Image (cartoon, rainbow, N blue to C red; front, side, top):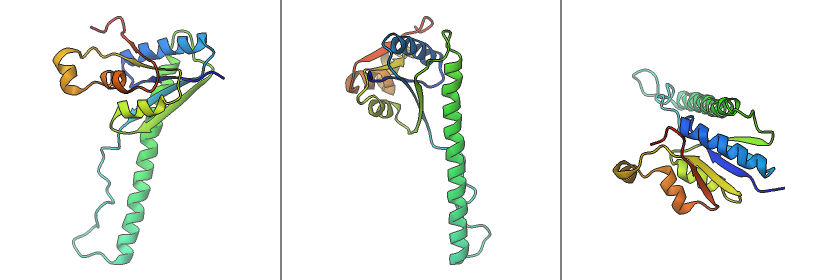
Length: 166
């Protein structure tokens, strides 16, 4: 079986263009397609992270509070993961040629998309991402994902520039 083609997506139009290109490339080579998105930890404040009331909590109350906080975090993580996987499925459904047959959606919690994509591309035939077109000074200051991948990708890299990308 051929090595997979890995494509990084974030829901943007450049990512959709990269997904379309990667799906075509994978189909031509009869290779599996891994669609990877990175989602951040929940921004919501955990309502169970502090003891309720103004007094000093006992050991049992603290234990119960910790259990509620852990359950809340688990529910939030699943909800955020499900939203990320849903984004991948919507992008796949929007492909003009239809959904690829051998596709694996992958959602990873993280704050550094380039690191997640580098790890996901280990052993891949190709890594594909879209270009947002933030060149020049903005790209230098922000340290774009494409620039990081161009320096550190463990396999060949294709950066797809869409029609509307400056």
